[in-house]
Image 1 (cartoon, one colour):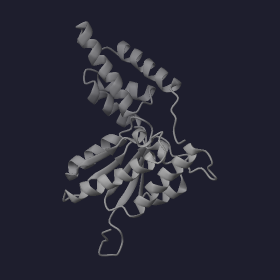
Image 2 (cartoon, rainbow, N blue to C red; image 1 turned 90 degrees about the vertical axis):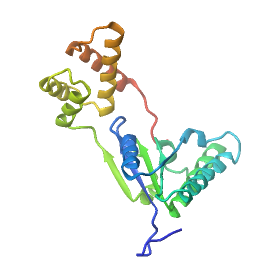
Image 3 (cartoon, helix red, strand yellow; image 1 turned 135 degrees about the horizontal axis):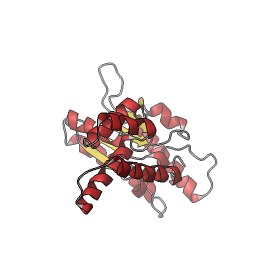
Image 4 (cartoon, rainbow, N blue to C red; image 1 turned 30 degrees about the horizontal axis):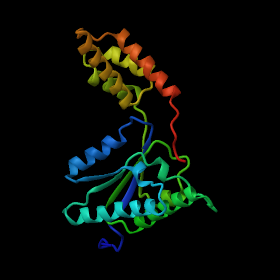
Length: 227
């Protein structure tokens, strides 16, 4: 593992956390774009296998593939664990069943790899309430992505739907505490409806109906976070 002139290891890991749609993944993509780095995205669900030992092999293979990727490029690429809630949860003490043992083994491998990481790892998650303390200690940067303020939300509304006025955008911003991703969903629905109906005018009534649908989905969708 390479070290800096100060004797500290050069690799580091960070975690982006916050509600869905607040821009965590997009920020990773923009960081890679602006710094000229590649991204290696880990498909977290595919790490697990029903076959004994395969989950551990899959996890080790991810880091081996990342090391090989680093060797082929001048700038360290970003290893992205997107929506990593399920693998960062607290380890099971005294695990007896095979599933818990497999989960613990997978987490232990990731923890070991983080200790010797010579590159950049970014994990994104919607929840941090059940984050294992061992993972928490290994993330050098812990960055929260809050929902936008009304003023920020107004800008997003007006950017996504330039047909509405700034005062209408601010009205929507104050009434609905949506993330940027949710506002984008609503804007896309308006554009699709305009194409399907042939009516290019986008009115506040139509937008509010889409907002109600988004609120319904938000309030009734159960998301499984950390274990």
